[in-house]
Length: 145
Image (cartoon, rainbow, N blue to C red; front, side, top):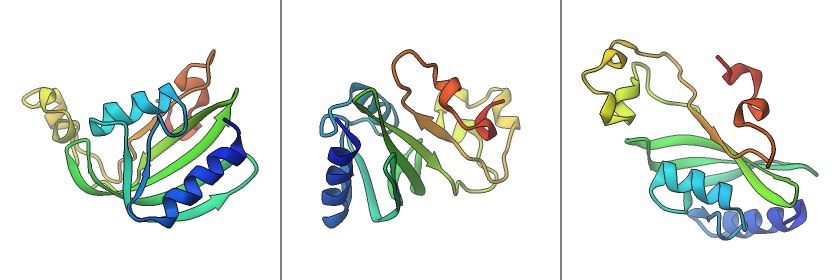
């Protein structure tokens, strides 16, 4: 996979709403893993998707994910890149409701100390990482603890 092929896949997906891309489609097991973990299937489906940016190194798309992390209609920004001939993504839910708690998305945390935490303007992120790099080493500084 190279950036030109990835850009072509994204352009085709943008042309037919809802925007749908899978890890299998971009030939990336790491993307499949992230999408399956978040959505329960190897499909990123965004309604009202638009292209925010396309460069020689990335493609950025935004839209609305109908159901993710136990929440509905979440604004989502996804940055697609290619590293070592493998597609990767960085997915950000950037408009979660104020007062969101981890137990709202992870039921196993209900009744725990996590019910005491609420956030204003939370930014949950998930991404793949190129081989040989930890996810932490590829995350923006603003998302590190």
